[in-house]
Image (cartoon, rainbow, N blue to C red; front, side, top):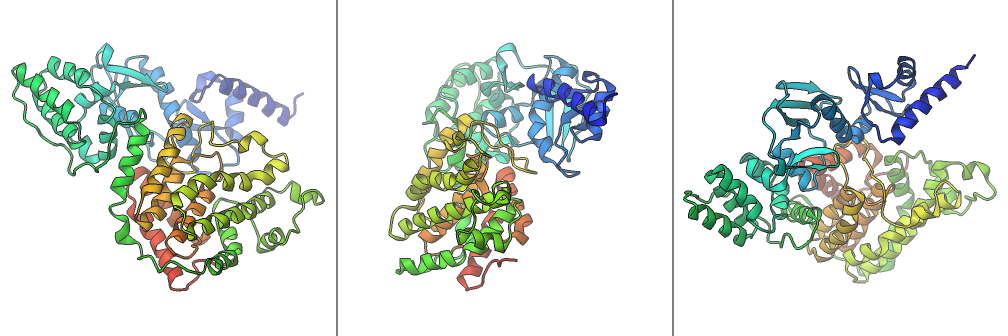
Length: 516
C-alpha cells in the first residue's frame, strides 16, 4: 500500500505533466478528485474560484498575492477561452495598455463578448472580471497578444473612450507614437463616419508632435464631407521628446515616464550639499556604514543576517572551503556577495567623486556589481556560471506587486535607453529617485534588483555630495508601498518623499538606520 508521501508524489507528477504543457488555469475536471484534494491540502494548488485552480507554492504564507499576480494573464486567457471560445476580446482601453507595454494587473478586467451576461466575476486579492455583451470587432480589427484577444492598435484608438487619454496619458502617448501612418486609422474613421473621434485623434497626434498624421486625418475627413474639429483629449502638453524613433513602444513609454515624473521630484527632495573635496574622507564614511547597510539591505530582501556574520565576512573569516555550514547557508552566501559587490560600488563612487558622469559609471559598472553579488553562489554550486552572463532570459514577478516587469526582449532595449536618460539628466535629485525606481521597474536581473537599485541610488547620491543613505528594514512597508504607487499608479511623489526624508536625515548627521 502506498505511503502518504508516495501518494503526494504521484499527484505532483500529474501536476508536473500539466505544467510542462503550459497549463496555468486548471479546471476541477482536469484532475481526478483525489489528486486535486491532495494537492490543495498540501499547498500545491490554490483555488481561484469554484471549479478553477492555479499552481501554488506550499511555502507561501496564507493570503500571499504573488502567485496570483504571476498567473493572472494566463489564467484569464484560459478562463475566457473556456467560457466564450473565440468570441471574446479585451476592451479597447485595456488593449491600448497592452500595446503600450503596460502589463499591470488591473483591478477589474473589462471583456467584450456576444455571449457575455453583463456580470462581474470576483477573482482573488480584490481583482475581478466584468464581461459585457457586445459585438466583436471586425476580422481585421483584433489580434492576439500572448494568448489574449485584443483590439488592433488602430481599432483601439478609434474605439477607446475620450477619458482614456486623460487617465492614462503615458500609455496613450506611447500607443499613438506606434502609428507611423494615418492610413489604418483613417480607414476605420471613414468607414464609421466618426467625425468626433477624428477630431479627438487629430488633437492627440498634434499633442505628441505628429502633425503630419494629424493633417492627413483632418484633410481626408473634410474631403469626404465630414465636419472635423480638433479637440486635444490630453490635459497637458506632451514632454519635449522625440517619440517613435525606436521600434519599441517600451522605450517611448520609459522616456515619457521619465519626463513626466521628473517634474515633481525637485520639490520634494533636499537641495544638494557642497560636493566633497576630500574623496578619501567620503569613501571612509561609506566604508564605516557598510555593516548597517548590509544588514538592512539584505534583511529587506528576506535574508536573515546577523552583525556577527557581517563582521565575519568583512574580516575574511568566512570560508566555504573549510566551513560546511557556510557553504550550505544561503544567508552567508548572500552576505559574502554583498561584501564583494559593496567594494565594487565603492570604486564606482570614487569615479563619480572624481568627476566622471554618474550615468556612465553606473552603465559601465552595474554588471560588475551583479557579478560580484552572485559570484559566491556560483562558487558554491548553487548557481550556474551562465547565471552571471547578463540580463535575464525568463519572466520575473515582484512579490505582492501588480506591476509585471517587461519581457526579456523589452529589457534589452530598455536598459540602454535607461542609462542614456541617466547620463543626460542634469537634476541630481532626479538621478537619485528615477535611477533607483526605473532600475527596479525594469527588473533586468532574475535576482538582486532591489540591492543593485539601492547601490545605484547611492552612487547617484554621491555624485551630488549627498551622504550614503541606508533604507531601514523597519520602513520596508512604506518603501515597498511607495514603489508600488510609482509602478502601478505612475505617482512618483510618495517615493520621492520617502527617499528625500531619508536623505535629509543623513544631511543632518542623523543615522537613518542602525544594526539591530
